Image (cartoon, rainbow, N blue to C red):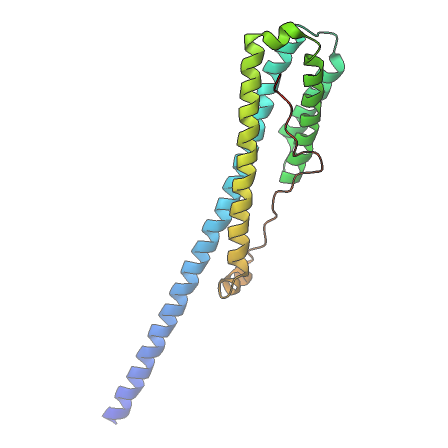
Length: 191
């Protein structure tokens, strides 16, 4: 009897260790998925931050140009409308659409600027151009970082055996940032 009790305790002990190992793996995998999902959300927020920075630069740029080209109301209205849409965007798709409209309006503004040589030499305008160019680079980097985070997350939720935990807890595939047609062109700010 003592021998069978010892074997039974050994088997139960082994099962307990196995259960603890499986539960530990499940917890670690779940926490890893949460971490990757949070990275995706953080990177999406970084895109939004850079788009907001760009939007915040627009009024200064417009006010500088207005002093030289006050009769170009249509472009100023288009810029204001695009900024409002960007501010009200609630998803990456809406932000991308509003950003495309803002890019188009900025491109038209830069065409207008070509007609004003004094404006192109204005220190405030030159500084704003540099800020805008830097912001365009930050937006591009934020998009790359977001897509990198999405790729890592999507691989993790699809790879076996973490896909088991992802399926149990409802982790869903994140969408890559794909800008709309023509949105990839940066406004020409070099004169």
